[in-house]
Length: 168
Image (cartoon, rainbow, N blue to C red):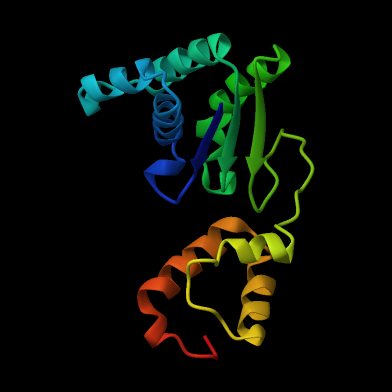
């Protein structure tokens, strides 16, 4: 099972937001116990650390690959407990962890991964109107082949292609 959460700026990058996102991904994979707990608890009564512990217990029982995309948006102090819990799961060989971000995280040693190769990145553009080759090259170079900005650009281009200009 793969649990993917993108830490978008704002509440999705908070400890509670990340735990919510992972619980929702776990529910999509058939284990909705943590997500059900989140939905049944009034927002003001939600405990990020309590939910994190419940998520950790579920991941001990059901191993997964956990991907935290754009982790550079998360507050390092607030999410330290999350990274500790996930690191414990990795040590126990219960889960694998992939952290994707633009900047290193203090106290976490991981190798930088390159963006997608150009042919793979082009697959993210399949359903969008074609770009002139020069414009595609500029987009690919600007994003470094990172999937999220390419996906967002493709979505915007699909919606507004008649407004796009070659110099954009």
